[in-house]
Amino acid sequence: MRQFRLLALLLLVPLVVSCSSSNSAGLSQGCANAAAACLQGKALVEMTTSKGAITIEVDGDAAPLTAGNFVDLVGRGVYDGTMFHRVVREPVPFVVQGGDPTSKDRSTFTSQLGSGSFVDPESGQARMIPLELKFTDEEAPRYGRVVTNPSELGKLALMHERGAVAMARSQSPDSASAQFYVALKPLPELDGRYAVFGRVTKGLEVVDAIRQGDRITKAVLEQP
Image (cartoon, rainbow, N blue to C red):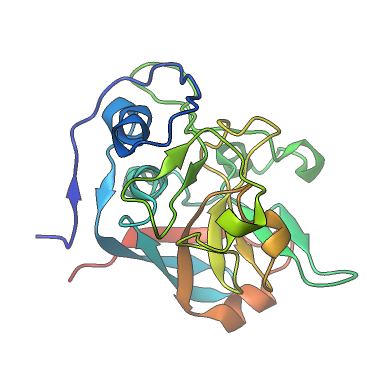
C-alpha cells in the first residue's frame, strides 16, 4: 500500500469565492468539489530528467487538492517526455518551469509553450484547479483567493523557499492545471499568489543544471 489515500473523484464545479474563512467553506470549495483525487499525507515522486534525477516530496497535508492533482498526473504519465520550457536564471536565479503537456510534441516551437493544460480524456475538458493556500492557524486550506496581507503570509504552511515546487498559472487564481515550477532561491514575492505543494528533497544540483529545452524522461511515485 502507498503512504497516501486518494479521496473519491467528483466533477469540478465553478467556484464561488466566499468571504467566509470557515473550515467547512474551505473544504466545500476544495476537495469535496475536486476533479482529481485529493492527497492525504505525503508522497515522494522521483523525476528523471535529461540532467539527472530529482526527488520531490509532495505535501498532501498542506495542499491536498494541488498535491493530489500532481500525483494523479504523474500516475497518468502526463509529465513523461515534457520539456522544461522556461528557465530564468538572469539577472538572478528565479525558476525552472515545465510540465506543459503540449511540449511532448517535439515539433512545437518553444515560443508556443506555456499555455497548455491537462485535458481529461474522459470529459474532453481541460482540468483547472483553484489556488490553494494553507495557513498554520487554520484547519483547512483557503481556495480561489490571492493573499497579500503580510501578517497572513507569515503563517503560510508552505512558502517559496529554495527548492519549493509550486503550480504555474495564468492571471486567474483558479487556472492551474499541469505546469509546475521549482524555485531556484527564496521567492517571498510569490507567497500567497501561487500554490506551493511540495519541495525538492534530493537533486537540487540537478535542478540547478537544467536548461531550457531539457526534458522530463519519466516521473513515478516511489513505493514505501
